[in-house]
Image (cartoon, rainbow, N blue to C red; front, side, top):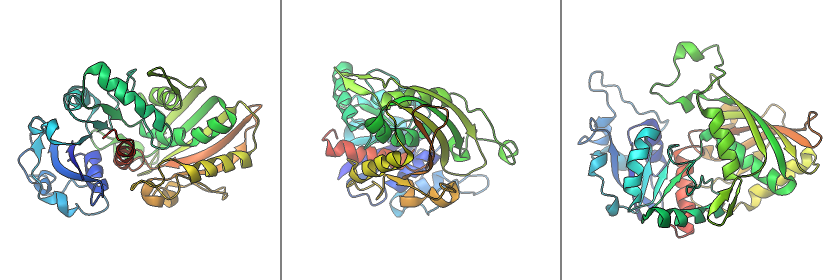
Length: 358
């Protein structure tokens, strides 16, 4: 069993890590850390509002038994050398300070954007660009670290990149146009989205979201060449919106392909890719990496987000696109709090362990 520490354990994403690592066959949580106001308290007490008694536990299942009585440490009390792996669930400004200190000694898997765009840092999605993990050794050597920093992509990028991978491999991609309908949980709870803003409404702007998707998709689907990633050459344009859905990011994608293809060709490419995906035997991997619906009313967040515990990407409405000479359009759904967050990070850790990078 590898010894694991979780940084930011009391926040929403930290809570997702607590759940995702419960009874994990390969990783054991040995330490949890949070802000100074939580340090020294039992995890159960750190989640309780001292003035109202309200529990700030936001998961749908109870707090796992292993975590309830663990004493929360401050970040400065965590000695990275005592652990085999550190998961971080902190804001980007904090991540930029905290993560390099841990990475000097121990691998760090991060949900923050702080290091995603640096040349020696891959943005990894298990089963999509596993070969980019080789860049972690380059990162170690360049920075003189024993560990590394491996960030997840933005949760909106995750489902899009997963569905683009088989299309790119089979038909090539010239351009991608995407509109997202993103769940409110993606905004977090501090500050989050005000209830009076989102009810009976759609908010057509999410700061920095479109730029993240446009950069990350090309990096993820690029090629590793001579110790650096050569970004994919297709063009990406997107509009990201917030909608009154609790969990699950829905995206409408339009893809111009290099070679002609029919909707059935794309469906078969996705299903074949899903059947043979490299990570299918890992503990957190879903039974189906991509599920394709023939029912034109699917996917729907309420019906489909929790399939395979939120780790599958659900696709529907694959159609011929009429604006491109070669192209298709489809709708996808990805669970932003599972595959796009902590459980996706655990899956990444599993992939890196198999590659003997942990």
